[in-house]
View 1 (cartoon, rainbow, N blue to C red):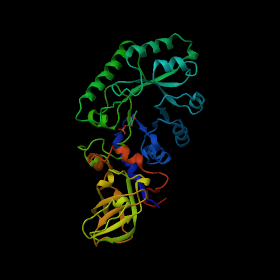
View 2: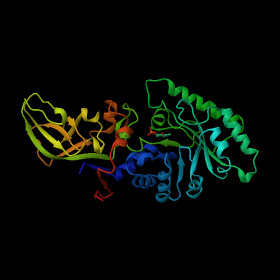
View 3: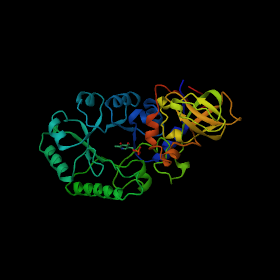
View 4: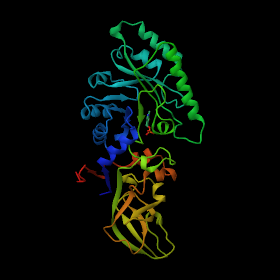
Length: 362
Ligand SMILES: Cc1ncc(COP(=O)(O)O)c(C=O)c1O
């Protein structure tokens, strides 16, 4: 079967509420809502009071419109299918002057957010003067031909790196850009820049209307010195033991004899592997069986081998992630970013269970 991914809906909503702290939030729900499930997440965020969403995918944006008819939906990637933008009433990024001049006619009436490249530099205008040129060009057009310039945004690529100075630099560049636009008479209804780490570090920055949060809404700490209680995880990943075997000191097991205990040992063969989304680096650490930690010794596509003792039996649950084995614990141990561990989970092969408000499996 390949593991069971369980999400506690009530906890998910509480975590999102706490993380948003009553502020306006655009929830980042790209990549199937960090693999919590797009429909589940959009509806649950709605109950947490979050009604704005950002994704990189037009297909996801269309689905969000089905789940949240009145939501603000922002596409962070440049979009070229403008029919869909009108039909689904989407907000889109304006990523460069070149894009603007190429699509100027199609953009008329579209809700756009100007994007600043900053140090992250994946996309966006390079400076205030390039933005002002476009803004002035808009003013020169008949009202019916103009875009709806709703917002302005950037992404801080260094906010998660506590040991680097660049975050302060990119934040300064962004604030200077906003000041220059302001002085030139350009103000915006929606201003958003901060991801989870930036918000945890600085609170909502002056003049900003929205946060644009991902990982903290999903219950992982953007960096490990933050209190766990402020970021409660609502997810558990577990799998069944399908066999228990005794391995002699001179035996090996797994592909290419990958597990070579060198002593008599007892192992559990567990029904989950990298094909289900367990990262190889995650398998360098422990799992939890009956509330005790046991070492994972080998990872295959559909199985993993755990060294156990006599206290473990067939039918015991093997837990890879839960409240005690938090995703962010393994981020801090170098397994990969929180979103990398979540994003790897195979939504097709894992069985998904949502615990609803009364604790009943759906
Ligand atoms: C453009 C953009 N904004 C916001 C976020 C949310 O970041 P985080 O999950 O760190 O809160 C992401 C995530 O990758 C992103 O790409």
